[in-house]
Image (cartoon, rainbow, N blue to C red; front, side, top):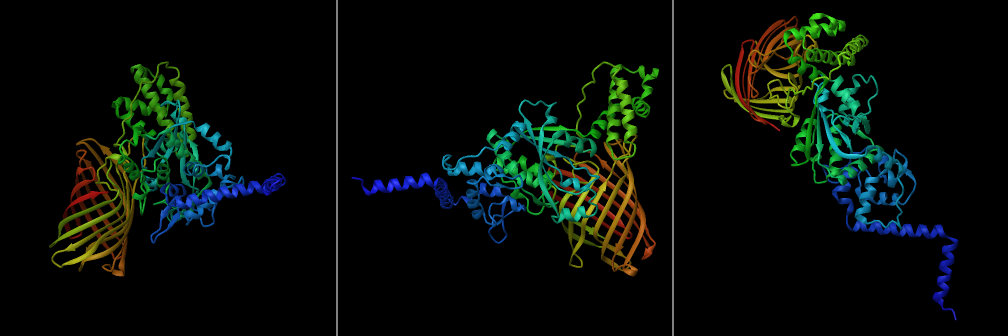
Length: 638
């Protein structure tokens, strides 16, 4: 006698046999609902790691918004602003083989870091949610063969102010690599997609997010050539102490970021900012991005890493080609420098008896150095590249006839490592005397470095000041005023010698307070620039002399017709008395034939003494027309 339970079982089995897809769908749906409910119960969408994976940042008035701007990065239409909806949609997509993202792969492969983390947290049942093969990711990871991760920082190239905001990237050090083969390693870069010949739109699109930023992978030697050989930027390599699991997590997220673009913001969401986000994925205990609200200066991010004890395992210095040449030239006698110039102009002069009279090791050193210089010139953006290539081939041909190895030469940097430098922002308090009364002053500067600031960690002989303001209270008249505002003040002093001939230049845009005729404290808008030359001596310690041909434009109610424009000249010297003590003397004369016809004679003397890495005192004297002032200030960098 068959019971009702037996009959129901037969009916159910018959349904499974003839409707297998429906039963499988029911099973998947059931397991998806189970996973989603567990995610809701544990509020998984509120966990920091989920926010890191999706690049969510808190909103000013509550809630979250992802910094990713590519809609294909999200599984939910509300994913950019709703972490919960995105998590539930992501779990749903893991059950589907449908291709998603810019790379067009199943979600388990396209967003493999999300899959890996959720599988671990929710303990996916492989029979109910079968894992998919991801051959493209496996092949990519095998090719990288990672052992270590290094953060790479090319120092700023002061002839290009934009370089202070770029570039940092990661190098994936392969297993079995040596110092000599490390140049073949791959890198992970984040950069803006800028069309060729972008012109003036590069500036405003870069500032206001007009370009898309993408992650990419390039061989390291290409980056070394770009920054070290062409742009003359020393490179600092910071090997990080990540474990194998942390490196794997970082690379999984780097892989899925290939499915995304961000709006690129020159000052904030730049390369350094998004590279830091990868480090937080590797080690969520790092809170790096929280430190940057308004702007992200790459040099500051290096100093941020040093605050985590043990994070930086090793530091390696890779000198720029120009640094190598200058350091080698410093070791030459006057006679050897003369020979160097001769054989770079005409390599056949190595056959002259006087050259052969030199010790053979010195002949080799000079030919190697000549080759370095000719190679450096052939990489430049000039019309004589082919000429220098042919000269280099000639000197290499001559060098090949001397069969002894090149002597080792260790290149020392001109400045210390970036993490030893002062913070890029600065605040100061001071007091002084101007003509007939005392004043107190408070200054604030957003960035970055001026000629009198401590040189440690920064490129020498260069200044980039952005968004600086001075507020002053005059005692006698009991008046508070904005004394000075600098939008941008850039100075590049490039000492000229027999090998390097780059001109010096400067540009200033801002406002200042002047004394003119009957007006003792007049606001004056200023735009000025100049082109000039600089030279270096070592009479005291190190001195850099400079002279500029300037053009100066002023706008103020103090002038007839409210403006004046005219040429001028400026000369001065920066004296590095010791590592902690520097002096800047400058004088200039300007004549204004347009607008208010007048002239202006200026003298300034400034001294800075470094107390600690982020503390300094300054004493300054300024004379302009009949206006004199002296001031003493204490400055703090942060």
